[in-house]
Length: 120
Image (cartoon, rainbow, N blue to C red; front, side, top):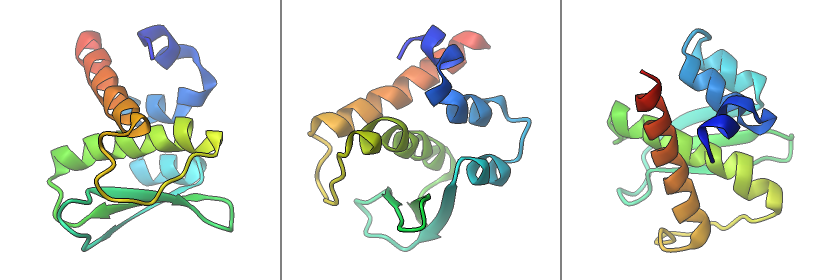
């Protein structure tokens, strides 16, 4: 994802809204059909995302995450919503960080961070 793509492509509206910071987080997420929650997950699981039968997404965060980590994990899971899941790819598993779609989501987080820093 380039800076231009982030600023212009409709599929990144959610990311732009989250980075803008002028609309409350819960309002943004509801507008995009995403619900968030926190649970006591095993330590190696930072979060998980799934699409429910009612037609919206759920991101469940591990209660143990620090706020800074939670923000990075949010964008990682948002990448799955924007890019991975529409392609029909959906895997529930642990220790998948070496798979391409997980590496793509991590790269997405780094690109957002770099773009945000460059825009300051």
